[in-house]
Length: 138
Ligand code: HEM
Image (tube, rainbow, N blue to C red):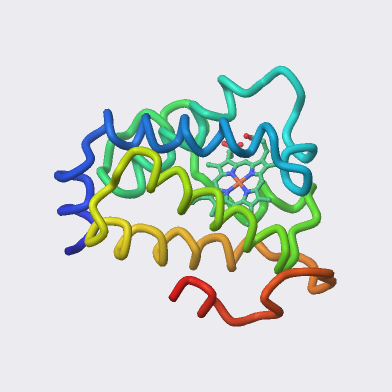
């Protein structure tokens, strides 16, 4: 299953539900929750949802409003190490389970997002992360 097929399977509707379930968890999360600007959950949800609609499905709304994603640069203000990466991926996996995303789709999408998450790391200090390898996914 490639990105096109993932998008065909989920549609904007499925991506929206997944991102919503994800932020419900992020909001309550002790490690990464506090990084997000208070009172802007709707905007945060819009940005991730539309980024994914763009990145997976080619829907141009994100680019039209935010310009080139330059995600790495946009994450520089936050200290992201292994622990933060792993938490992000864990919460996203839980969100996928909540919306009952088919295993074959999850098996494609989660590692794809984990690779992006790994690329966001900008500090190597970490207390509790997996210490490097992304094989915690397996
Ligand atoms: C590795 C762990 C990550 C942490 C701790 C993290 C945290 C954050 C924070 C605090 C913000 C700023 C608030 C906001 O604009 O909503 C943000 C923005 C954003 N993040 Fe992440 N993020 C992570 C990984 C990812 C991944 C894997 C993706 C994409 C698959 C992603 C996509 C985005 C997008 C699209 C934005 C908004 C960029 C903009 O238009 O300004 N992030 N992230």
